[in-house]
Image 1: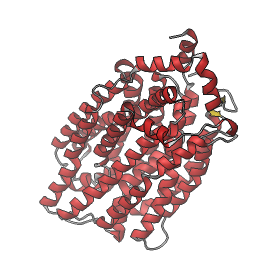
Image 2 (image 1 turned 90 degrees about the vertical axis):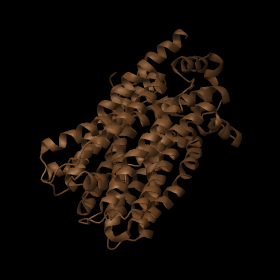
Image 3 (image 1 turned 90 degrees about the horizontal axis):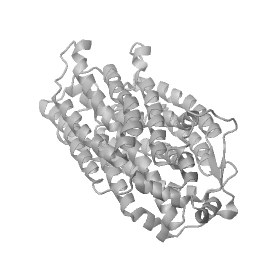
Length: 480
């Protein structure tokens, strides 16, 4: 590696910059949990019905999966005085706010059509925020190790936001809890305040490359297909789908499973999720900041997949809490949830960091910056995994006779069907996802070679014309 490249690679992104960049992820991830875990049972309880909710979410997701690639092609062509990705965050935030307002603070009766319309609005805005920030990350951090480090810090920020939402029962003496229908408008108000604040912090204090429109280079269909179909990217796409689908099965079933199968009250179900989510703070720092540095990203991901399978199996064996349970009775379940959450955190962190490496590989070989397009592939697989889980498991619950209404009494047969949906499918899917990385070749050594080639004088001029110059935040930040 040349000395100039070595010096460039050794300059880590300042920690304050990483924290500012990750601010937008805090409300986005919290909204994702509310929509993924609590929204389906909430609308089912409002009278829409399990099958109708499942169909509504499936319809929206089927439409939504086409949105990210379209947005990506627009993002890769975007050139504005404030950057390529920053405008999309500015545009997406008010759209999310409108969707949140209509979904979590409905006025009057709701229907399946109402849910479809406002979920479409919500997911359109969330796609702009999620894809924009994901593609932006490849520009903020450029080295193999620093990309994992960036996600190691930003992922826990989102987790802390989720924890804050889940701990509301503690602060309100159980009056406000994510699982209660009456609490949804309060959560909506929290998000409406948090979103513009997070946008301001992220947009003002994160640097970005800005290129004049005159220097823009177009890309053909063959460029897009060639970049997506390359072996490294296809492995990531398939693996990300499986790693999203596996744990994703548990999301829409979580409230039902821990209330009816494990015996927890609704407020305590939300508190129990805190253990799962909070484990991601240390998990993110471990998988992105330690394991990825020592083992490489793909090997660390494989270790996480096996560990997830073991810990999810242990969760199966944890007994139901007795009627009138105490804190001591909750400890085994809490420990199992911490272990599962610790392992599951690795999936998104490491896959997203690996996509950034493929971006460099494509830039070198095809002389095209397709950052947004490549990231749209994995954001789309995550969405697709989420849509399939609801479409499959909710009809299965209806088939076995499970009743989601508050206070309903379910048969042992219905509870058993609920347990099987929640516990076994995630293990199989995650292990297959980890197996996708046997023979994966874009490791730290290969990426260092790519970065050195990108830094060569004959390539640097072309790259600068393509991506422009780096615009720093308005105020300098200390090194972190």
